[in-house]
Image 1 (spheres, protein in one colour):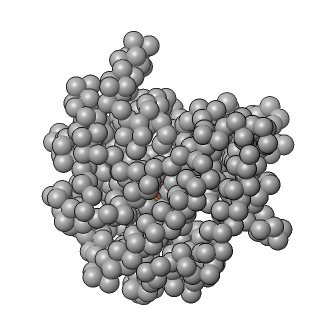
Image 2 (cartoon, protein in one colour):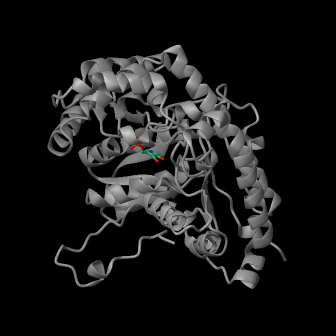
Length: 435
Ligand SMILES: Cc1ncc(COP(=O)(O)O)c(C=O)c1O
């Protein structure tokens, strides 16, 4: 399985391209591997790709069609209407925001790369954390320092130690990335954990990059949510986008909210410099439709609420299957991810399948059973830990009609196509862990 991408023969030859090479992101590579299996007519259960798995809302499709005539590049920071709408989106969430502090980009991924590059210095990231932070740090010529943390936020004490150890080794950690809520774990860090990281950031002068792309998909909307921007407003940049809450990944639209204080304008100037030389501006028609999305009219708020309900129900049903098979998995709190730990089954996995690593486990699931997942090592884990990242949202259906039926169902797991996937998963996991 293309969990780490197999180099093409050309890449295996001594390269004339210099030494550093970043492989295709593990998530995108796994998606392509699953598509290839499907094309060969082999059965697949695709749990490897974190796409929201729902159609674009008709109101947004119409807005995008109406905006097709917007063919100018426009300002690097983004169209004023979009920046204003994004500022109001954050203001409604208790983070008063001026449109001048907002920068738009072609996906929040590009903005994250821009921020890491603009800030400079090394980057602290959580172990485990989303595949791209460490890869982006490396692309920017920086070192990513993994610091353990269970839910997208590094453990504060270990973060402080990592900063000091890096300094003693002659490296300066300048930023820390947190993911609220988190991919790969599907968990939301507690306000206390966020506060502790903010204290370390204050003490060691770190800039916090808070990736909040899943914020609107916390399953329990009443769960306490604390952005570090509330606690440390002058050292926190937030990124978000429309890829997850409104399932618009292919539109490639993200927004960043820069810190207040003296840092904001400096970071803004640097990020605009980077954006101006790489993407110029996000696609103009998409920006028009995105301005509508960030204004959150009731129909779109209702769509996000329905998708939250769907993600919660299916993720929970899948978590129960993993738990029943003997893996240890906390109840998912957000988005469409689970992070089961197969170490309780380590002996049987070794005896029956010869599995000694998370990559081995993912490979057996793919090649023996046609189930695509990602190994925890794609997220910075040690591969002996037998953890997997399971994305649950591509089970909603093969057509828009099925996906909409899932979205509108109070009991999506009883729909025949979702029930069939759940039954297949149960069968696979039972066989995998059979003693
Ligand atoms: C944690 C996290 N951040 C950022 C992104 C990228 O989102 P975008 O589509 O806005 O580039 C993803 C997408 O998988 C993600 O999981």
